Amino acid sequence: RKEVEQDPGPFNVPEGATVAFNCTYSNSASQSFFWYRQDCRKEPKLLMSVYSSGNEDGRFTAQLNRASQYISLLIRDSKLSDSATYLCVVTDTGGFKTIFGAGTRLFVKA
Amino acid sequence: GAVVSQHPSWVICKSGTSVKIECRSLDFQATTMFWYRQFPKQSLMLMATSNEGSKATYEQGVEKDKFLINHASLTLSTLTVTSAHPEDSSFYICSARASATAYGYTFGSGTRLTVV
Image (cartoon, rainbow over all chains, first blue to last red; front, side, top):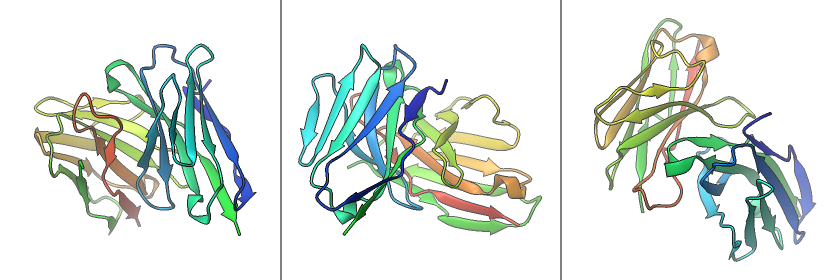
């Protein structure tokens, strides 16, 4: 079993749609969780951190369920510019080791 | 915000030659820097963790003699791909965290290596 697993995608959605990505992790001792966005041939950029209480940033909502070892990202009112690969990232205690999910590709169409 | 400068952005080299990639933290001290490799349509794979002033820690399956990492100062870490082969062609990225309390990691812009 992979340490971090994500929906394989790709997700093809029309503008304005709501799309949800899921991610599971295997190490129950994992400490920190993030969603990153990576555009083609570019470096990943932090989208948002993920907290147990859930957090929202504009159209983006992230949720963490430690009991189920599950992370989610919800994007509402999708824009063309949201097209990218979304990476689920998990770090161990102290943030010393970082594991990336394989990423989920999102295509938003006009 | 925290910035990591990585260069070169891309490099083409002949088989058997060595290539050095540099990552500099511009406005913070990076005690630890991480080196990743990403093949097309695949995720980032951690290659090694570079600690200033000590030997790097390599992930299983990564040859330490082939991928030489030097972290001589708090703002500079280098990755040298020695005796490069076409199968080493990949996207190499470094990252660091500005502080123990900072959330998320800052990435360099990546180096696309093509070995011919």
